[in-house]
Image (tube, rainbow, N blue to C red):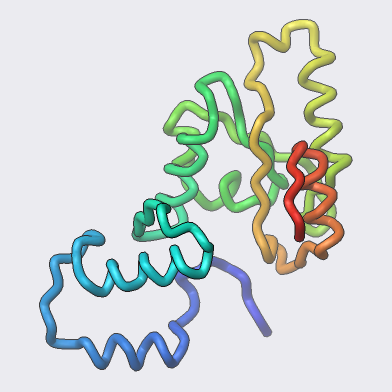
Length: 169
């Protein structure tokens, strides 16, 4: 059975383990201030075609979700995800600790659709007291989902279009 619990329940790829063994015993400044991190940051910039990009390394998914979501949302906005979504179930309130609400949407097999996002948006704005309710602004998905289903390319494109993004997939 393949389990999709989290990114900590798997061992690393054999090439990563070999690289760790190769540098074992060396001392590094850490915290992104060493030559290994500098090399990795350069590779990321090259692969993304963004030579000017700032690259920051974080220690885990919870910290990454927290920092990205808090930096994207205004204080009155919230994240929308499947009710089974990782930030709604497994992050021990980390996102909400920043003051940003997480709204879980009922979904089929852990996948939310463009229609689900549209409906969450409609429900917010049709409420007479919407100025007193967290405004849905960010859509969070997991790939694969926490139930192990995978978004198809067309589903992702629909979500992007619903968000008003014109991103080629």
